[in-house]
Image 1 (tube, rainbow, N blue to C red):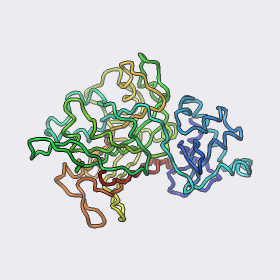
Image 2 (image 1 turned 120 degrees about the vertical axis):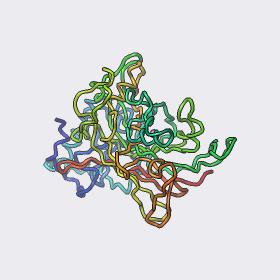
Image 3 (image 1 turned 180 degrees about the vertical axis):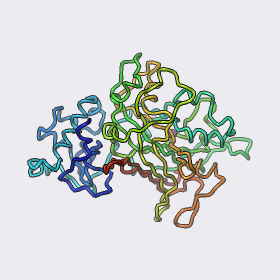
Image 4 (image 1 turned 45 degrees about the vertical axis):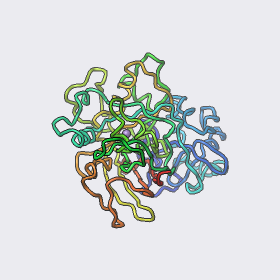
Length: 418
Ligand code: MN
């Protein structure tokens, strides 16, 4: 049992009933106030400056780790040390800790969320994107091939993935311009250059790794939990028209590398432990290095909303992370089975997370069924893909036994092409 996960813990900080940031969450992020940047956690609507807490001598690790502008240095401490810090934060803000509550110096660490700017939480060295939701792979296979051959022959044997672009992974709230590129409309004989007209979101989660093993060594499915720090939401944007023309034979490139957005609070794998759930039966049987024991999927409710300029949000998808075919342990084992070394701060995308039912599809490609259906917005307009000045918002949370562990949101506005 991880101490901070005890569902009976209450805190002396005010937390509203539906807050994503219960005392059991204790996520980590990078915050900025005035010109100071520091590692932070959040309880309710209170952001806690952990550098201030560290300077008061509460943690057993070097305080400078919390003055960093990225979580990588914290991650480099490894699982046990970061778990101890999270447990210690839980103790400090426990409702029974009157001494901490009345400590004037500690009060200086407490900030209102509205006074804080959240920055990119992790300096991502390498970004890998998987393709691990069966319903998504099936839907895309139906749209571009046929239902009988929807899944490629390798799909149920390999957690398929590709190496993505790290430099354009950006935090929630960062607007970006509609990408331009080369595309070949089906009606044209020759390719054309222009703005993407089929801009799409992909509902994903990401996980971030601790420092792995040396080049040449592998991480097993059993060891994988010790190498995963935590998770965020990920909107892995796609320009479907650019992607469709470029992807053969080497896969995604400029149709993907213009932007991917992260939610700013990294929820630890420890905090998500109570929400573990069984995954699907994998048939055909996977190779031994991909076998795993125990419940390794996670029950996380996910939602996507589109907000037109000045308008209301319209929900277009409700899905769940438990629908994944391949879990994080299998993804990490597969990623390192060839001896590829994993570094602290690597980002691994889940792939679009689509549920089995209509209304649970995690991209406009699937929701509009390749543009053959329109999706009504509350303001009376319609969408097949994403328009200029639309904001796409993704939210996610796990909830059980009266404890809610949420991610907040990842939101980003699409500006017209430059
Ligand atoms: Mn993706």
